[in-house]
Image 1 (cartoon, rainbow, N blue to C red):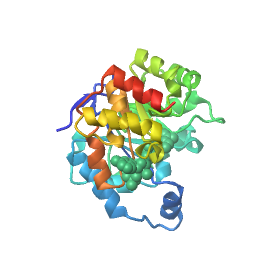
Image 2 (cartoon, rainbow, N blue to C red; image 1 turned 90 degrees about the horizontal axis):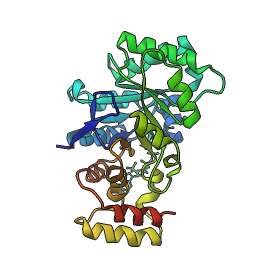
Image 3 (cartoon, helix red, strand yellow; image 1 turned 180 degrees about the vertical axis):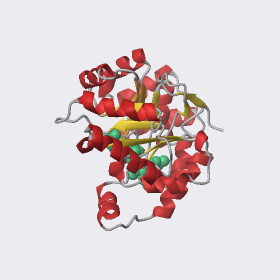
Image 4 (cartoon, rainbow, N blue to C red; image 1 turned 30 degrees about the vertical axis):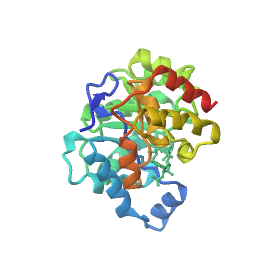
Length: 283
Ligand SMILES: NC(=O)c1ccc[n+]([C@@H]2O[C@H](COP(=O)([O-])OP(=O)(O)OC[C@H]3O[C@@H](n4cnc5c(N)ncnc54)[C@H](OP(=O)(O)O)[C@@H]3O)[C@@H](O)[C@H]2O)c1
């Protein structure tokens, strides 16, 4: 069974690899407007395969039109074993709308609480203190167990943290991978210091890192040979785990075989030298 590690300072424990459920704009369009969710059964099977491998962190969003799919996928499993994260879109950041969005997400997910409720992007129009007042109210009602943010740079993260009165920010979610390391300059040190968990989206570069260019291929092959034949995806995901104990990659789960392969990114570690070589190969 996959190890569980602390999720920031929240007291919750999760698998270091999570699963994402964003299936691209065409899929969202079809689900929202045509009420057609293509390959629903495969996607449900992929999430279930991940849970069976011990992965308990699942990420969705009201925007993705996949909350109902997550509901179906998690039905056979123990609720308390799972850590379900969803997100609210900025056009719903007023006090009243956020409460309504949360109720809608709870219904779609078939849950009576959300483990992690995240602000999907900062809003240019709404004062963050109004939004956070609603998030704190949802915490007090027990409808959400943790407050998260996503796509907030360092200054906006600080502002969001300061606008909370009773609770704290548990996590942030950012574009982060071995080939896209911008947040290591500022946000990662801040999160480390404040014990904020980081969910890494596009951990496989939206698929690009599984078919790397020739320079990275040489390094990946070398690392693979030293670690029992690990695949490029497993190495790209293990990079997070070898380097950080508070960063949680959430590769998309839409294919059972990929999910099983990706879960083999956990439970082993690269040396510092290998980490450096891998990073340099993607510069
Ligand atoms: N907060 C935000 O603003 C934000 C933005 C974007 C995404 N996200 C979250 O992050 C999650 C991950 O992002 P993402 O899905 O766009 O990018 P990703 O996980 O970096 O890449 C997904 C792509 O990699 C492929 N893949 C996965 N495992 C593979 C393997 N072992 N071998 C070969 N190909 C593999 C997938 O194909 P298959 O589908 O066929 O497996 C898919 O094409 C999303 O699902 C979502 O939950 C958040």
